[in-house]
Image 1 (cartoon, rainbow, N blue to C red):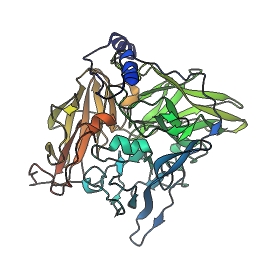
Image 2 (cartoon, one colour):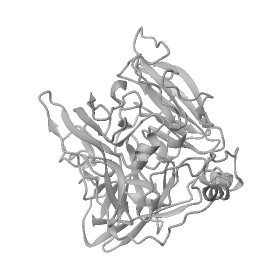
Image 3 (tube, one colour):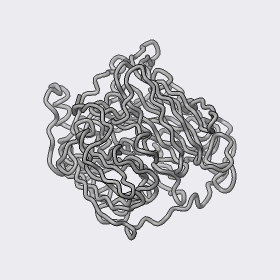
Image 4 (cartoon, rainbow, N blue to C red):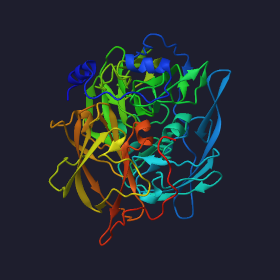
Length: 518
């Protein structure tokens, strides 16, 4: 579906209308049904410098594993100077450090829970055994430590981590538990880039200098203090009225090189961003969720739903001030529903130095990508996301929805079927998009993906291969990444089965059932 068609559908109120939940409160109810518009364009004072998140320290143990220590803790963060907010974070008051490891390395991560209630940490986009996934079956009790270990075997990519507590994922992420997990290729590395030899060495790769992760989130600040009640603001879930980048309000990024690589993560609970620069200058899209594209794609805009990532490279001139902006994402669900589709934000200012270090031109080709094809698929499954259910079923911790065979390839056809927007994520795998509403995918969807945006009525066909790991007892998740939808039960479970293995219909190592929407 084209962008113009989606915008037309949004203005017409396409699809069925889901009323906001009871108890929303009259002011927010009125805002929801009248399509209240938030507009910060030209109104943001970019006075706070934003930097790349700190790199997490690591060490190599006696077994050759790279070891990280992460502490999920309650703390404070000053979004506004002098006004401390109660927050959660990882190794700090808000958000967490960037983990970095190379393809081929084994990692061991000690995750300690200091927040006083059980939580988890999911490695979003990572290919790994189900028992190490950090989903709702790997809960960390208060005061305890969970220590998953696995070998990294996937291309260089910008992944991330966040809680995945059944019924409380939205709340735990909103409080501040999230961070980036960068995978580098296993060639020579200077500790800050994909690889330091060959054509990829021409990509910006110096962490914190010309290669900067940016975690974009919307929040509600009351008198500068984080409002911890992330109640539903529309059919999609929580929508804040203030944007943070790496936890910073009113952010500017100091730029010292002619080209800068921005690793963009939509770390919001429900908001969709349509990102572009204020002067509409072109930039190069070089990567999506699961790694680099075949070649740089020149574009003016990139749209990200919750959980999606994009790597872009933009060129700046000496002394320039360039604003990254988001406006009118193609939510497609109509002015009657407050889904953020009419909102506009100034996100970040790039502030270039008077003298810039030269940057090499980008390579014409980045990586080899196998052709996305359905030829080897042995099965097609369909998934309709509607009314907090997938295929009419709400998530149950004690139910396995189906099993897939190890080393098999399947087609998953996913559709948004209830007049609101969804964001579909599959654990363990990186997949390829075969088609969008019957058409070939646009350039931004041709690479490896683990999360896709589904405006109302949209159907995507995905080709997925399940390799390496099987476990008939411990499942992976598939779900909507609009976190209110996920918490209300728009999620399911599958297991990967080896030769002769059969699922018995329920997870073999299951904690007590968590209710929806807690």
